[in-house]
Amino acid sequence: MFVDHIVIRVNDLQKATGDYRQLGFTVIPGGEHKGLGSHNALIGLADDCYLELIAFPQAAAPQSRAEKYEAMLAAGESRLKSRWLSWSVAAEGLVDFAISAEAADGLFAKQKLARLNIDGPLEMGRKRPDGKELAWKMGFPETLDLPFLIADITPREWRVPQSTSHKNGVIGLSAIDIVVHNLEKSIFHYQQLLEISSNQIEKRMSPDVNKALFDCGTVKLSLVEPVENQSLVKQLQERGESPLLIELRLAKNYDVPQCQTGQTHGTAITFAKFG
Image (cartoon, rainbow, N blue to C red):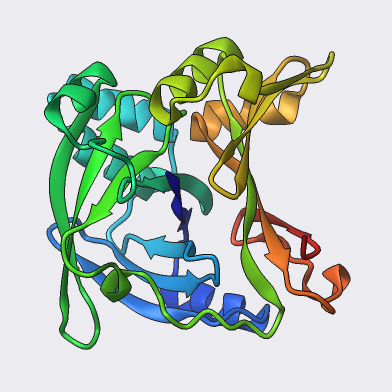
């Protein structure tokens, strides 16, 4: 399995598109999601991953994403709708990410979905600005510390941006930090999903935060549990378990300072040199 895409919540899609272009990214219009009141723009990466800028024109004032998710589940809504609409109430920034289920043997088989307590496969779609109708299927774990799953019905190249050259030299995704409530529980969740053993996981404990690091394809995932770090505690309260930071890989001969973004529409991005 590999990381399919990163979901970044923005308030104004047109403004965010312009701002990311100013940072040297090639951004293409994505289209509208059927029946969900959202639209997006996409930043394709050369490693076949992409960043999704998603906006909800009818979104309410920001509130706790985790509280919204739990309230909708309690009201009997599906995990798909609950998770999707939890993005709509979040403040700008990283809200989620997806794992590709394309190469996972039988990941969407009923027995495996049941064993992992994944709701799916559920079909979704998007209409591109050129009129092309896209379709894919998704799977949703119960907890927000885990990513959702995605596999294409229509050809993958219809959904994934084919424009992957960026003026700032970004060529791929190298790491994701995910803030979690309970490190040991989240480690168990990822072991079940990715089928990794304990010796594939590196733990780093400190008075400030506890971490667990492991690979998902070419991307390093880091689970971060706050101990005495109040900013991370606040992150959990306001956004729930969610991506905290992404690291993008630069091509050779590009300098990190020239495309340092800091907090761009609430999203923390750092950069790593090639290799």
